[in-house]
Length: 102
Image (cartoon, rainbow, N blue to C red; front, top):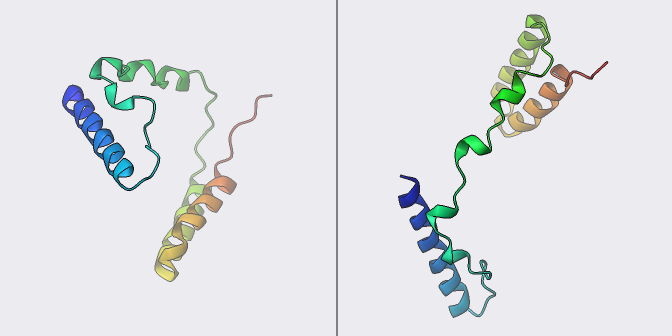
């Protein structure tokens, strides 16, 4: 699957480069990116940091704060769907601040 996906990406990069050159634009992938092979793909395990999560401090659940945040999101979605992302960001920042090391 990864090889097929990698070769598809290479084909797409070539097509974008050819189209850009036909229209007199600079190539988006000027450094030979189309020459990449699926061999250059890194394994998923090398970039995942799941075990790092087990070393982080854990806080007890705050169901009341979570409930207020979810209620605010539901209200924002009902009242103004266009602002849901901003509401979500604001509420999550206020409600779920990172734990600061002592």
